[in-house]
Image (cartoon, rainbow, N blue to C red):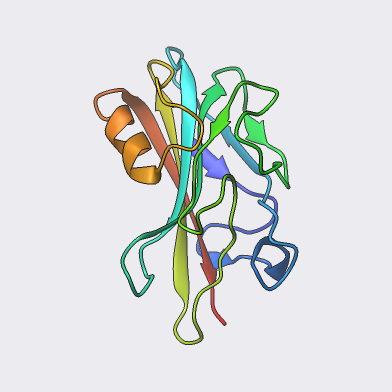
Length: 151
């Protein structure tokens, strides 16, 4: 699979509008080359450079298999009209929480998309750890997009 964003290229700077320094809205994402047997998708966005360890910025799962994109500014609600569910980020909120690193060196934000062979039996509000545990053994393909942000 390949994961892309119109907002930034892999390895490039995430625009401020998608961070706590701007509108703090999720970037639009699209993907292709999906395995035929994919039943659903899960997306995890995290920052492995956070001072306290990997920090979760967005968890969304049970994205229907016929979807090939998430629009910009996905609403911060637990259950989306598509039946996708959003988890709790490490800000303690449901939905997307953009990059907000401390001043200093650049942080790398990993947007990891997983094609799964089944939907997840998790409630909205699940954590990154719960989603990663639930997808273990069910990943058909994975794509990653990395954005960089520095303050």
